[in-house]
Image 1 (tube, one colour):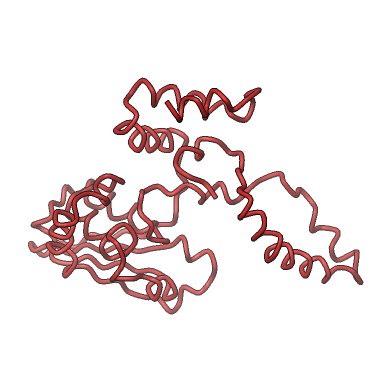
Image 2 (cartoon, one colour):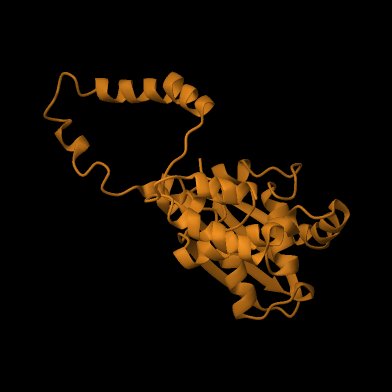
Length: 238
C-alpha cells in the first residue's frame, strides 16, 4: 500500500482496482467477523474500544531495506555484527540465519536478487550494505557478488518459533576463518523518522538531484495538511 515516496506520509492512497479488490474479499471477511457478535453484543463491546487510537501497521509498513524479501529482521543483526566486529568478507567462513520454519519455506532461490532472501543476504554480507541501485545494478556484477558469498550462507528453519510475532524474530551467527563466532538474536525494530528520511533521499536523490529531492521531501511531509496536492504532482512531473 505504501511506496517509497508516499512513505513520508501516514495517509493511505487507494487506487480503484485496490478498492474493488477490498470490496470483494476483505469486506466479506470483515462482515463474517462482525457476524460472530450478532447474538452476543456484550462479547463484542470491547471490539471497538480504542479503535483507531494506534495503527500497528505503521510499525512494519516501511521496509528498512530496498529488497523484496519478506523477513528483513535478520539483516539488522547481520549488519550490526559485521560493523561492530569489523568483519570483512574474506574472514567469513559461514553465516547461519535462524528464522521461523514458515519463513524459510518461503525463501525462493530462483528469484531476482532483490527478492531471494539468500541472495539478499549474500549481497549484504559481501558488500556491507544494501540499496536499491546496488540490487538492481548490472546483472553480471550482482551475480558475481552473490556467487562469492552464497555458498557460505545457511538458513535454518525453527520449528519451535510458531507464534505470529516470530515473523519479526531472527538469530544470526557468523563464524570466521580464524575460529571466532559472533551471534546476535534480534527482534524487528521499526524505522525511525530519521532513517525513513535517509532512505527517501537515497532513493530519490540519484534520479531527481538534491534540490528537487528536498522540495519533494517538504511537500510529502506536509501532504496531510496541504490544501492541494497539485504542487506535489507538479514537482513529481518536473
